[in-house]
Length: 357
Ligand code: CP3
Image: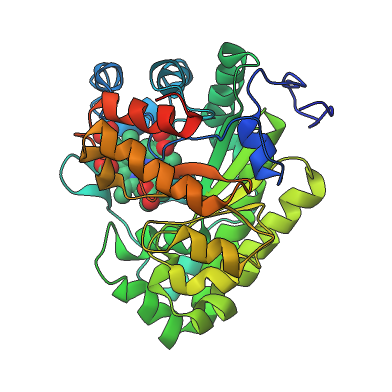
């Protein structure tokens, strides 16, 4: 971008060779549509699996800035995406908050001491945990240096509801019944938990930008488990506050909000103050764009569409492009890329977005 921007500890280059994602995120029509892929640094890439195999423990991998930098850049080099996203996880906040998390091969994250009482919630630290997360900021610093001015780097955190779901449920969960039980039966304790997570997350994201993140994504993947009233009353004010804080300090850093399975919350998401609202595949992109003429959207190819032949992928992308009607838009999958997708098909997706078929 032409304007000089953030007051980073290591100021990033003031202009990118490819700034199409920043342009689109800030509501301008770039010369070429941008694409990135949720979980783009992941198991579908052989080079990722090679680095991953060095670490029996997933969090130790996240804590190694050199390896984080290496895998963050792999999809930029190999798939041609228009942004890098820092390799990390939304659950890195848990250990500094006193919760032990382990990533089990087939079960996903498992928390050995989940929050099971109001006292445990009251005892959680809040505010700035950044001194425990130095490895994330070092990963950002190294990655920015290695990327040079090629493409922007996306930093991220989980949305407070989604992070709370792991802390309360103890892992992945079908109904989020424990967390929702807390909301409905002990709303004050729920508020304390979400409020603490929001303040920790705000401080964490601020530090990511100071270390060079060019875009921020808030992934509140499971917010759609709430109905509109509960989301509006119990979660939305906290997410709004995180976004407002970032935008007031870093007005030129775009904020993307993402949730999965939540078309019923679009009225709320488009009122969060985010520059971009991520959609999954269950909503028609054209309908969303017509309903919210001022909003930039991200998405929303079904991740399973990448199992299709490359010609079909190109046709699906063309259909999505048609729906954007030339408005700024960021192409992505509606959720993370699956581990058995062929890298050739991921490349075909990005090439189709770029119009290079
Ligand atoms: O997108 C990227 O390339 C950056 C890396 C990234 C990871 N997790 C790495 C990861 C990002 C952005 C996340 C976010 C994340 N983590 C979310 C929000 C987005 C979404 O997917 O809805 C959530 C809910 C989590 C929590 C989480 N982490 C789960 C449920 C799992 C297990 C499921 C799985 O895919 O294995 C993880 C582990 C995880 N995080 C892996 C990766 C690459 C797989 C671990 C491995 O390689 O062994």
